[in-house]
Amino acid sequence: AEANENALKLASFHTGKSRVIAFKNSFHGRTSAAVAATDNPAIVSRLNALHQVTFLPLNDTGALEIALSKKDVSAVILEPIQGVGGLEMAEASFMENTADLCRKHEAVFIADEVQSGFGRTGSFFAFQHSKAFPGIITMAKGMGNGFPVGGILIHPDIQSRPGLLGTTFGGNHLACAATLSVLKVLEQEQLLLNARVMESIFRTQAEGIPGLKQVRGKGLMLGLEMEFEVAELRNKLLYTHRIFTGNSKNKNVLRILPPLSIQEKELGLLFNALKKEL
Image (cartoon, rainbow, N blue to C red; front, side):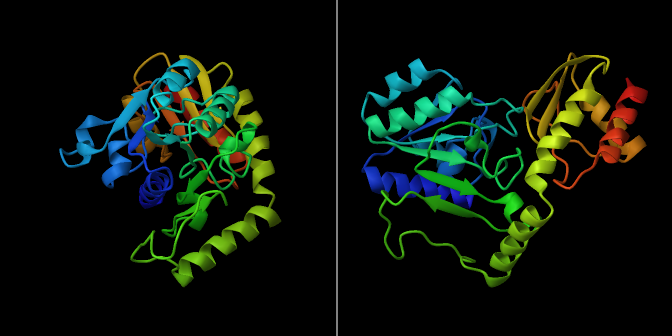
């Protein structure tokens, strides 16, 4: 949340504009502007709602162009793959169009890679599955392999100044050491490659699962969309098989985000449990 908060603040300083464009089913955090850009009214207070945010359908370039043409938009914030939203993916062409339209209308394209970054999708960042180039990239979660850390990458065209962005624990030495260690392990153990290989195995093992509608996502940021609501199935996987899966706004989707080091044997445990329960 703090990474996205700082990104939105910086975009507004850079452009001199206030409106933010986000997308339906998005989740960007629980701090002031970040939660305002999150498509979940249940967690947005009246104070948060004072922010000017327009929610658009994902992958609708026409709607985005119309909104940007009003010239009051400071930032377009986009999850290349929506995590909490149910593993909906931004199409490569849509991300490329978003980057182009932001440049045309002097807005900042923010790629929210908090969940999808650091190798989760088989590329270091999920936006790299396209030719898009964001102005700001936000990241966290996978950076510290469980240790709390977050950060933003800023394009050189966006001018910051000392003291503009602040955080209580900014520059924490242990957090920096954790992130450097993660980068080393990602490279040494070829975990980006492993994410791509395991995705292929996952999709193969998913074939024939009763009630499966489709496999969503990329790399090891995956979802199983079923033809029914999955709450009962999640409980059976957890309490009977000791396998934890995630939920989402889409009640028919099981979220699967295993360690990037997972192997075929562990995937087999999941699918054997699914077949038994289904």
